[in-house]
Length: 138
Image (cartoon, rainbow, N blue to C red; front, side):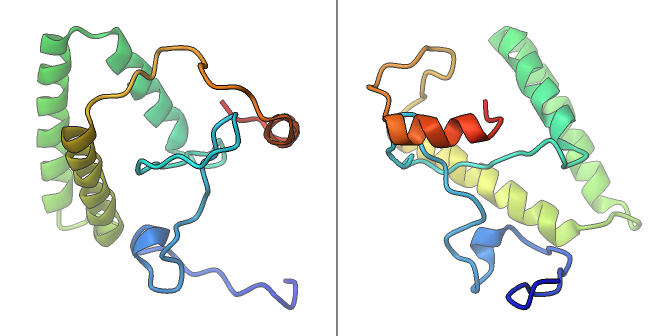
């Protein structure tokens, strides 16, 4: 471990809820170099559950609103059952993610839905694009 690194501890909440890291874990920047103003959550391929999250997101984009409603109701029932399980792990982390999801809902109610399936419409910033080329982002 580098002398500047701290020993790792399991998370019990999102980074943004920790008084030591209220700015969160990642900064999301658009191709034009501006920081997004809405709440965001970064998934990475090294997270064992991220692949499933992406698959569910893709699935939701295929569904009609009625199908999506049924699916999400079933998912909510499963979440509630899992949270109530006496052997459930990481409950406080789960709760912080669910609270964040509610914040997203409130944000959308205040600002309206976005257009995630539309193409780019801002002028690219060459410096940002150069940084993006070093990574493997979506």
